[in-house]
Each structure stands twice: as C-alpha cells, then as structure tokens.
Image 1 (cartoon, rainbow, N blue to C red):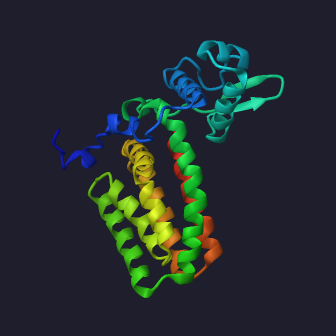
Image 2 (cartoon, rainbow, N blue to C red):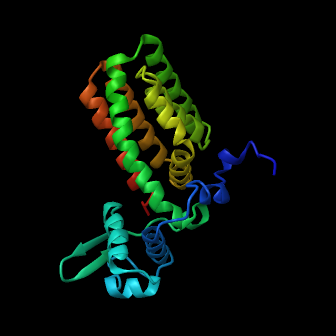
Length: 248
C-alpha cells in the first residue's frame, strides 16, 4: 500500500494501524468501555439517559461486575458518565459520532491511559526544560510552535508538528530519558493526536486555535523559567486534550 502525502491534509485516519497500536489484546474492561461508548455514539443511550445496572451490563458483556465497575470508573474520568449512589450511572455528554469513522472503540481506553501517563511524564518534562534548556533548545521549541501555526493557517492536520512540539520540550530537558520515553510512545501519542485533530477539523475555528493557545502558554512559561507554571500548563493541556476527544 502506498502512502498518500495528502492524507494528513484531508484528515484520513489509519484505523487498521491504530487497532494494532497497543500490540496486545484489549482488556475486558476496555471492551466494556468501548461497548458503552459505542452505544452512546449510536444514540442507544442519550444524554441524561440512565445506563443499565452493573449487573445488566455484566450480563450483556459476559463479564463480572468488578470489570464493569472498572469501565464505568474510566468513563467517569473521561466525563462521559456520572454515577449517583443508589441511583445508577447517567450519560453526561454525547461525543461526536464522527469518532466512529476515525478510531477502533476498543482502543479508546488505552488511548486515555496514555493521556494519563503523558500528563505525569510531560508535566515533569516541561518543569525540567525551564531549568536546563539552552538558548538553542528554546529556539527549537519556538520553531516547533511556528510549524504548528503554519499547519493551522494552511488547513493541515499537523500531527507530526504537534508531536514535534512535545518532542522539542523533551529535548530541552537535556535528559535523554524524557526524549527516549516520548519516542517510545509515539504510535500511541499519534493515535490520540490524530483522533483529536481529525475531530477538531470539524470545528476549525474553535478546536485547533484553542490547542495552539495552550502550546503558546506552555512555551511562554518555559521561556520565562517558571518551572511550576510550565508543569501546570503542560498537565492542563494534556488533560484538556483527553477531554476534547469526547467533545460533541
């Protein structure tokens, strides 16, 4: 299969590659998670709708109730459902149905776990960058920021440029373990970036400029040498990226 150089501009999404990105079978709780998300996306569970009981969800998915609780816990973290003691779980928001065109649902839970790990890793990366970045490293982060701005202006998806910004921050730490860890996660990180940016192209005047403003704020904190602020802004950015995946 040949690579189409225009695929990022159009917003094409390599579903088969993403399905295999984790390199291992999906966990049972991930399958339950994906099943509930799909039912929400298909309109079976509408906004404000009460989900079936834990026992019923366990029966539907042929798993134990603790497995269902794990899936519901992650759905609460993602802001898709809320639970009320004695009253069950309810749908809080309806994600964009276009998600079904872009991502294998049983990969979404893994993607969200990757966001969690990135918030911890890259928050500390941004903190270290303020302390150890050379003038040249600061310039590389700024160049990466400019490449992202060009992508927005030209209507490109900008996944490579997005990863490049985060990699430039990791490089600025002068600690190869930040860089090596980020590179080892590139496939999983690109999964989340690709999905978020594809969905963002459906709202070009809102989503991508918002993401870019967060990048700018991270850069400004690093350039100013404010370690705590840089860490906070990076963690907020990645947390926002995780939530944006499910914005309807």
